[in-house]
Length: 196
Length: 266
Image (cartoon, rainbow over all chains, first blue to last red):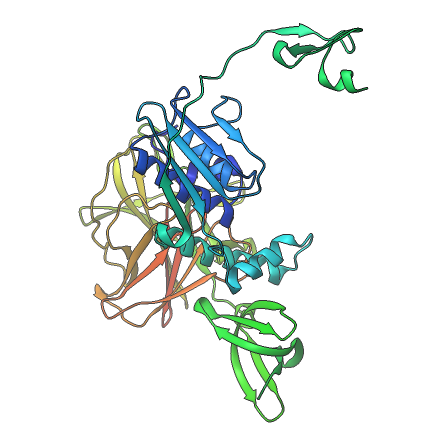
């Protein structure tokens, strides 16, 4: 494996395909690195708070290494293309918000129409491929100001993610994280068993 | 004319493409964007053939009609999708014939010759059959930037060229190898997605202006070349790399077709 794979390759390999949303995430992640003077996270030095679960978040996970599993990716289901990236070492955080209408335009509209279709004709496959190329260039060559607003914000870094032990569920017998176990009069249950 | 019906001419037959169109914007790469009064939008690869303003008709001509009889070309593809080879790694190239990086085994190769060029000296390479595909094995002992080309003679003379990078940190400029028609990278370095890449077309060693250079990539699903570039006065053309996989550039001048495979790097 060669070192220094460019951010865009990291994002595409993680996400699996190229799409405008992913590229917006690439721009946001690269900007955050530059603004905060950081690279890729190793062990929760960085934290990302994302307000959407759309494609861009995969770029943030891949490029910044703020990941769901590591506990330094916090998802707030607001349906907004807003990403707050904080650095523990730099004691600094930047809130990056996609501008309303940043992805408007006839080509973006047509791309969305095609992306929403279950089946594409050969012509539509070619058309979609052409559009991705056009949109790719637009997103990656646009000034950051055209696409996003950003500001530095006060941010209190949370403690590093804890590792909890598991206990046995009295219902299914499977292990459940201690902090997530439901204690009842009938025993200790995992969440699905507790609601049955 | 308020709005018009847009038709497309396919093999001499007109087909209604979109009704009540009130906006037509020709774009790059022969794309035409259309929008009608119902808000429907469409992009097609075509050119405007005729506008009957009185009858509210716009007739497009399908560009893909051109590819039904494409000129076959030959091209080289490295055996890695990694962008370069590592020191000690066996360097293999596959030789294909077809169009738009889609090989057509039925076309057959007409006794092609393969060569590697170093400091102006060409050394012949062996081309052998490997499970029905022509392959060139350069061995595991290479290092640096190596230019390889294949020449197929005939009524249509075909050339295929590529630059192989073995090891890292070979960010040097490259000189042409002196083919009658040659595509050469302007400033060789790691070519990556999201960056511009410039090539130069040389004819007998001199820049060829106003030449159409077709560009495609190995991950394309299009039947025809997705990009068509035109060289400037210095014979140069630039493309923004937006796709995964290696890129292929192809140029034709008279009876010569010459290709250049760009190994895209990570």
